[in-house]
Amino acid sequence: MIQEVELFGRQSIKVFANRPKNINDILNMQLAANKQKEAIVTEERTLTYEELERYSSIIAANLQRKYNIQKGDRVATIIGNRYHFPLLVFACVKLGAIMVPVNVKLSPDEMAYILSHSEVKVIVSDSQYATQLSQIKEINENALPEKTNIFLIDGEDSFVHLMDSRNSTPDLTPLEEVDPAFILYTSGTTGRPKGAVLSHIGVIHSLMNYQSVFNTNSTMKTLIAVPMFHVTGLVGQLLHMVYVGGTSYSMERYQNKKYIELTLQHRINFLFNVPTIFIMMSTEEEFKKHTFDFVTKVAYGGSPIYKQTYQILQSAFPNAELHNAYGSTETSSPATLMPRAHPPEKVASVGLAVPVADIKIMKGEGEECNVGEVGELFIKGPMVIQEYWRNEDANFKSFTNGYWQSGDIGTMDEEGYYYILDRKKDMINRGGEKIFSIEVEDVLKKLESIREAAVIGEPDPIYGERVKAFVVSDQLKEVDIPAIQGHCQTYLAKFKVPELFEFLDELPRNAAGKILKNSLKERREHDVKRAVESS
Image (cartoon, rainbow, N blue to C red; front, side):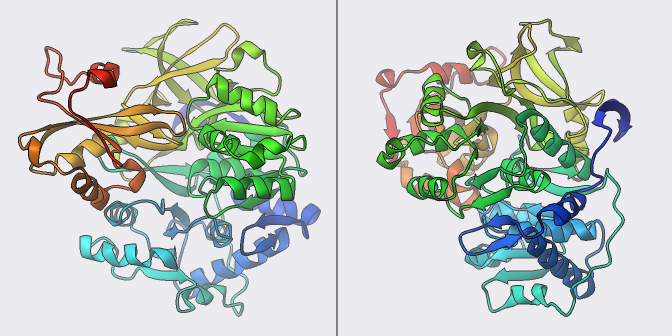
């Protein structure tokens, strides 16, 4: 049953009437029915539901009693897909602490900003990122508060202090539904990321949306190949499986052959990936040898699905329901989902609005589009974030009358199916990793030899898009591509560094002086006189 309430000061928000009150409740739900069932299976360890509860309680108790972590304190994690991650998720939830999962691919400069901006009290990091942590202090000596506790997994037994079983039962903190659970930092249009605050009620509704549309249950087994620090890995898979009593298997690093091997070995029946992973899988001979008839559900999102890719999915997974999904960090995962049964001609659609979503397509100036007209998607619902962390400007610009302005351009047909046509803010999508052009341009323009730069996404058959930079330089003959890329890697994650370069005398502009990126996208390679592709 769905009812309407006021939430985060926004009117008429649709919510599920019968819902868990917080994320810890979904784990408690499984202890009676699935106590000894495998909840998490990583490459190094398996955790039953009982063990997930017990060890997360121990970590919570030690964070609370030894390090004084209280409700509202921020705990950062710099961890790949290891079993420590879900333990810390539920440890933070028990204390009402706010988990800040940091993208391990970020540069030390980017990590420094996130850790400083969120004012974390504890950092739990994989030992392989210890170098980045040491560099953070060099980049910004004020990046970390003075009393920040840092724990390294596998590093001089420091994580063992959090697993001290002498403290095994934390004092549970009363939680309100609107309390923050996570801060996930997203790429920012000004070159700095924004901290999206995901609440307990928001995450819970995303889990219920998935279960309601996909009809998932305790027989589900998923293989998490995307990072758990991304909203799809965290909400769409990890917490989704806990909610329905399923099992999450994980890979610390995606590899085609390994993914196929684990899918076959464990008979994974629920796949959820960016289309890039399915494309990469299809190139392997081992993939072509098998018919994965045990797979019952395949979901995909994060980048466009092409007809050829859809046909690969149909052929490889003959018994699976295929679900396109559209959402973002700001919607705590899905805003639309393709229903279990849909007409073949809807393949390009991202599906229908999830049960508790209210979506409008706006032309601008407050005018709503008619069916079939193109505009920006405005989204309202309990799963929409309550705010951006300590960012009044972003909050003012991103929310209108209770709706989050997605920045995505799309349309809706007469049957309520949505289609995403373009990205309003020049965002590049490389294999599901979101990159804003302006942040790359800002880094390029730090170089004295570069006078102007414009960055776009170049179509790529594997990753969907690659980063391409158009550069105007006063010292064209002296430009060194590897040196430019090395400069970029100082400030940017590797996946954001331009792979393609084109040198121009000037950038195309309109009468108002605005760079015409559409003109850059329309340029053909054989018309380019000074195009240089990195090796």
